[in-house]
Length: 238
Image (tube, rainbow, N blue to C red):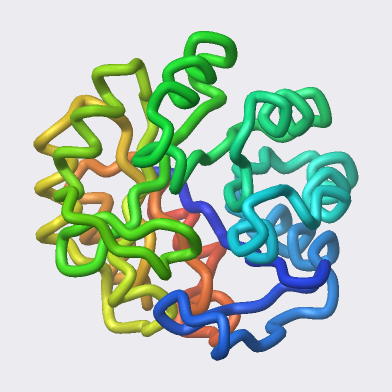
């Protein structure tokens, strides 16, 4: 299982939110590149990044920050937030971003996902974020009546190979991941599933690994010191 340390960006700076609420944003590190170098040192190959400004504005905002992290550290960057068009995807892929995460558009414009997968293959991932099992969009402020596994199956049908699943109620809470829903989505589709939200400590990592998930995103647990990133990477390599 892969470990994806997370860097969420507002105004070019690394921040964390509580349950996706923008009013709870607080800065957790001084510089994204410097933070990413720490992840590299711990043995990570990937970094998970989110353009939070982009999520709200529905267009890329902090592109320079993400491109700098990719170029300067050599880490593979998977990036979501505000990516709404083929032009956005093309720009990021051609500037060294390894994987593009399509979120709200997966529900609202599935044809874009289909077109992106056709053009860029496994460089495209879909982020499915849910509250009480139902998909939420637009920076998590809009709810839908679509059940999370139903959207996952639709994405599998258009060729998506990688899905990042977030239980919003666990995000930034350090209360443990929603293992039940992660197993449900992992069983529902053949896609690689990455767990997001609630990862707190090494026990959570070992639990997720035992469920045959593809990856785990770790954010607050790293910044709060409840998870030793190096130990997590080593545990997943065993």
